[in-house]
Every structure is written in C-alpha cells, then in structure tokens.
Figure: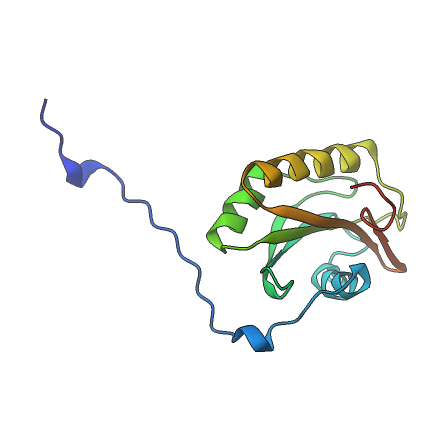
Length: 150
C-alpha cells in the first residue's frame, strides 16, 4: 500500500510569548486572580455567562488568559478538552478557572461543582494543578479554594 504523505494534514502547535518572566503578573491569592478575571468579564458581567482560564507557570506568574466559552443568561458549555489543550499548548504548570454569574449570586450551582471536579481530575491526569475556580459578579467573587470546595 502506497501512502501519499502530502495528503495527510500537518498539525502544528505554537505559543508565542513576548513578555519576560520577571514582568509577568504573579497570582498570590484568590483576590489577585479575581481582579484579573473581573477585568476579563467586565463586558459580559450582567449580560451573559463566559468562562475564562488563567494559565500560570511554576512561580504562579501569568502566562496568559483565554476565553473558553460564551453562553447565555444562565449557562454556558465548558469543554474540559479545550482547557487542557490550551494549557498544554502554553506549557503551563497550573490553571485557574472563572465564570461570571449575571444573576449576581456567588453561590455555585451543581453544574459548577461538577465541572470543577471534572477539570481537577483532567488536570491531574496530565500533570497540571487546578488552583482555583472563581465565580465573579459585579459585587465580588467566590473562590472554590477559599471555601474548601477543591
């Protein structure tokens, strides 16, 4: 059987970083992360749900942030594979997940708790840490880590 290698798609993976490690923002606690995530969610805060993920190196310096999902008024789809794919692409050591609640409630839903556990297991399987999951509202945030839900 003859194989035409030119008909097989080539897959490339890239991550372009133009910021010196010493100039990256360091996340020391959930409050630090909440400021970053609040800025990321500012345009959708009370309109629709969005999910953002911070990717951090071993020193908890931010490598980048990515919007993983945009949804409706009361929910959005979170695909763990997309988060892990992006994390591996960025060669990060840990991730922090966030989503906003347009309702203003800080209380996590059962779906929020389930996706957090699923992501935690997925991260563990590929050698990453899930540091936190924050629910962001216009009046503050709730940290899964601070509340002992991780």
